[in-house]
Length: 207
Image (cartoon, rainbow, N blue to C red; front, side, top):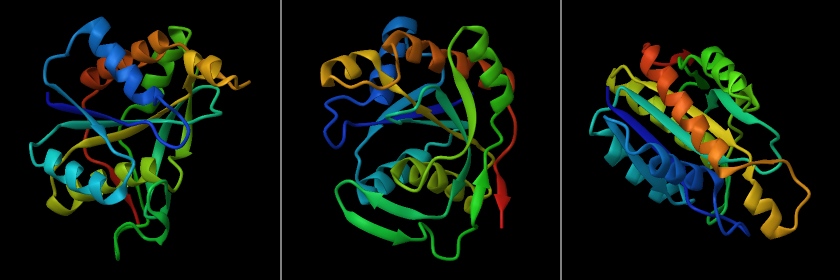
């Protein structure tokens, strides 16, 4: 089974991004799982699309995107990607559809209930949420599903938002919810295990 896992670089005033730090920690603690490819994407839409489409050409059975969500008190398992381009940090306002004439949204077929249950059993807070917002996290989620839909290539696609790491909160002197880097790394490993054990089909189109 070929799996692509992506995360984002730091953005705005954050010197680290919990998604990338967690992915790096997962590889350090658990090694590179068989069949897994990892990528770090820039927070810039044009560059993101170019790199994403190039990566997808390699053909994956599952694509799991990771992102940071400051203020979140649990891991968010996103269920829907919407065809909306909102604000991106380096490009100003880009309101409008991500894909002209594309479906309104795609619904993931990842086993979110099973993932959430496994995370909670490991005492890692997790919840299933509606969609990944309207910025680059949603963009990478939607564009990946649309790319596969147009080419009729079955692929499971999901997006997970991580809270800040505890070290980020401490370093920035913030009173915000957080999880440790080790907990987030373990969460990725758990998701991978559930995905491997629950291989499914491509995303559901929402017209």
